[in-house]
Length: 465
Image 1: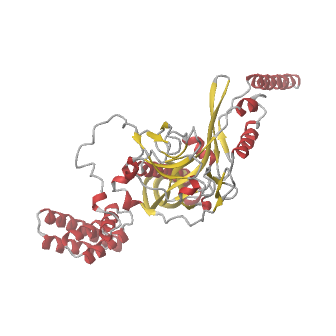
Image 2: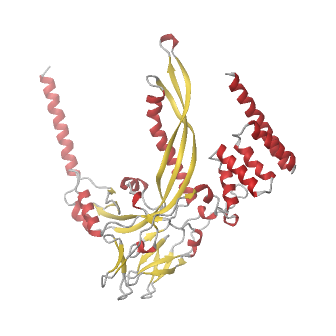
Image 3: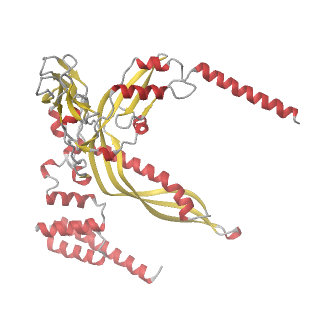
C-alpha cells in the first residue's frame, strides 16, 4: 500500500471515530460539542455522507440544514434519509403524509377483506347534441358519439414529469392499494352492480352509459400521470389473435373456430414506470499465471446500468410472464392522463402499492444486470483468463423516479379440450401472447416420423460398417 493510500485510510478512520463521538454527543443533547465533532469529521473526510446528514440536527437554520443535506447527497446520492430530509425541508414531502415508521411499532394484525364501497360517479360521457353515449375512438384519437357521430376533440398534452421516488416512499400513499370491491349504481337507469376491486371506468351493462367512478379509498391512492390511448378496436384485435392462433403446424385445425366464440375485452391496466441507475459491484476468482506458477486470486469491480423505462405491473391478477411477452410498449406515445381517454373503455387502478412495486422493480433490475454482467466480467474485464465463483456482491440505486401509467390491453380466454387458455393483446402495438394447445395426433405423428427417421439412419449406419 502506498503512502497516499495509508494517509487516506487514516483520515477516513479518524473521520468515522469523530462521527461516532458526534452521534453520542447528540444523544446527550450536547449540541455545541456534537457540531464541533461532526464538522471535524467532514473536514477529515468530505465524503462522509452520514456526518453531513447528522449536522442538520445541530442547527435550526433551514438554509444551513439544506446546505448540509445537499452535501450529504453529493457525497452519497443513495442516502435515502438525506433525500427524505431534503424533501421535507423544501416542501416536496408533507410531514402529515408520512407513513409510520415500521420499526417503531409492531405491524398491524391481519384483517379481513374490506366491505364493498359505494362508488360515486365523477363524470358521465353524454353527447351534448343528442344525449347519446360518447366513446373514445382509437382511429380519431378523440371522443365520438355512437348515436349521431358528434366529435369532441381531446387535446394531447405531454405527460407530467416523473416523481422522485425517495420523496414519495415515506408517505402513506406509497403503501396503500385498492382493496375493496365497489358497488355501482348507474346514474342513467338506476341499475346496480358489484364491481371488482379497483375499477375506475365502467359501462353500465343495462343501458350502456359510460361513467368515470371514484371510491372512498381512492383518496389514499396515487393518481395516474400518463396514459397510452387505446389504439385497436375489437375487429383488429380478433384478426391478430386468429393469425396468432394459426401459427405453428402443431396447432389443432379447429382451434381458430373454437377461440372465435370467446371475444377479448379491452381494459386500461395500471403500470408503474421506474427510472433508475444501478451500480452493480462484482467479485470473481481469476486464474492467473501458467504451469506451476498458476494461482487463483479474487478480483472485483463495478458496472453501472441505466433503466429509464422499467415497467412493473400494478395489477396482481394478470400473469407477469404474459405481460412481459406483449412488451414493449412504445412509451414515446405517452400523453398526459385525461378522463376522456377512458370514455367507453374499462379501466382499473393498482392493487400493488408503489412501495412493493419499487422493491419488485429493483429485484428485476438486479437480476437483469447480473445476467448482462456475467459475459462482461468474463470477456472484457479479464480477457483470456479463467473466471470462476463469479457473483454480484452489491447494488446501489441512484436517481430513482417513477410514474403511474395506464396502458391499453385486450384480455380474454378460451376453452379447448376442457382446459382454459389465457390470451393478452397489447392494445397499442397488437402484439399477442398466451397459451396454445397442441394437437396430440399431430404431435404423435411427428414423434413417429422422428423415430422412423432415426431407425433409417441406424440401419444405414449398420450397413455402412
